[in-house]
Image 1 (cartoon, each protein chain N blue to C red):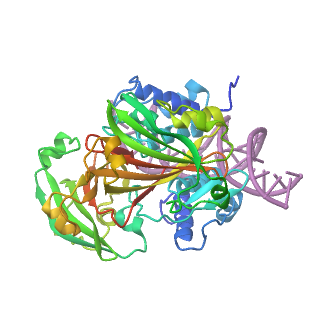
Image 2: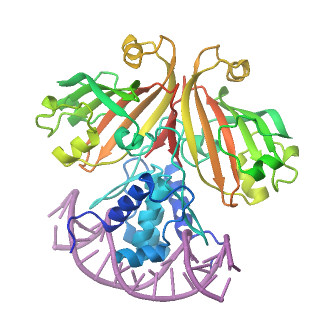
Image 3: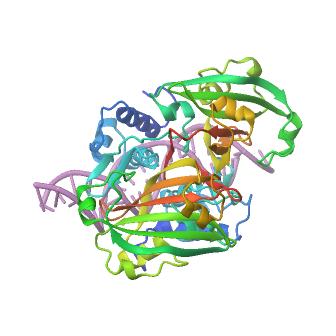
Length: 238
Length: 238
DNA sequence: CAGTGGTCTAGACCACAGT
DNA sequence: CTGTGGTCTAGACCACTGA
């Protein structure tokens, strides 16, 4: 009966989420009630509720006691503050990615922002830089550091127009489970930033420092992102 | 036996959270196991798990299958991106708040960023501005808009050094249940911003637009915050 | 009033970590 | 191996919404 080891609540979550982003459920619609979803999928209420809690947590629905689960409007900004990778977060918007520094093995910077384990320091890191375009405008300039552990052939992979999250999952069985992030508004002073994002020196950019945690124990990686927010906001729910 | 209508999982969550911020549980420590917590508090596992899920969701702990719930280090930045109000988010840091524009009834701005219901437009809003200091440095300049519905005497209240969330909860039974936010990096051009945050014209600031939803149906309010992030980052988990 | 989501119980089996 | 967290069942009672 079961095909894979994906939890039931996860399957239901993904199905409902797809229904919302595809427009089958529209803004303001009510999702089927919890009891209806139980009957439809042969699940019990706690399982159904877990799927709905995930959707509510990510802002796709709002629950209202006595009424139901209301489909929320899709956000105006770019939902990159949650766990979704950039690719999924932006959705149908025209997104392109180019690699400006191909993956290479090097040492960690001496003044690295996040704490590094001794093992990480010893093995060094895989480093690369990418620029992401939304509607053909450069919006994100991202520097990524991966610990150089059990990532065979990574440096020879092509990252253009690919989701790093998908690549890690499909080739290395790495799932991103969460992380932490620090945000600042800074002036674009580095000329590479200005060049890649096509902005003038001194223009404000949003600087995002992230630690991303995976299902492999003690395996995290890091990303530092410069965002041109003159046309797009970053969006999040809480 | 029961004293109030606070859910059990919520009580346990607050107790454990307090244990972490007060340092009773230190970074890297294991919390009591789920079964131990069940026995200690006479709860069942789903209830205990809900409390732990809340803690994990807010970044206080990391769960690891087969091991336990590990207390996470407290963040370096200001955790304002989650549901916590500024006051609770900053915790023990020296925080002061001054009111620069006292609450007053007025119309909504014509170009308001968020969509407003007809009822909201009709009744107008209560508007005020505050500046928040961390370690005696002005860090946040916040403009708040509340719908002018069932908030008796609000305009005569003193907001200095008070948590708006607490004031709303204690005086109006309003609980903040969630919300959405949009972030941008902008130049400080408005002279009020520069004055209140004590920065020069053109310096980058982080601009945060938030809609905050409450337990009263169809009652949301709005906050627009300018943050000087030169010394502090905004922190969040996902 | 009936139906909704919110909370809770008392079990069960599984996958994974450390010994 | 034991103990951990991860998933799931099959019920129960409550508070709230809308008719």
